[in-house]
Length: 119
Image (cartoon, rainbow, N blue to C red; front, side, top):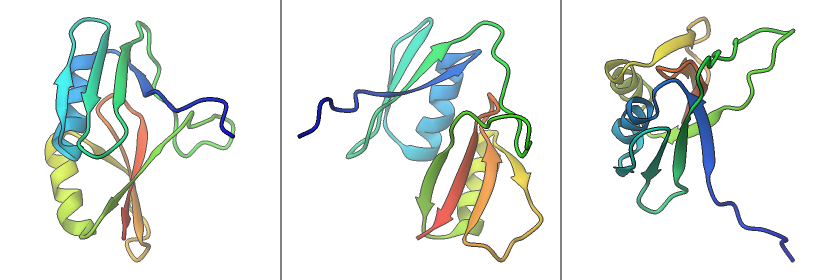
């Protein structure tokens, strides 16, 4: 028996509304809230929340001496098309060396790493 249910995945960032907008462009959904806490309600999926963190320092990736803190794996059907979309939204590639793999690594506008994974 589970002790709890997952309420939200929360990303610290300098601008919650802007980062919620990035993920809304990527995942769809509705952005709710203003100020230091903003929610993204994704149809049929887990909600994401974004919390203002003054002095936010993005994780380093890859860096053997530093933690990436966490990352999201996002499933897509077409890696090339999805890559064009996330780059247009403001993501930046973190790993462009091996294009034959079934995943690619990017950073969102606040620097959090995420992967696009072919299904």
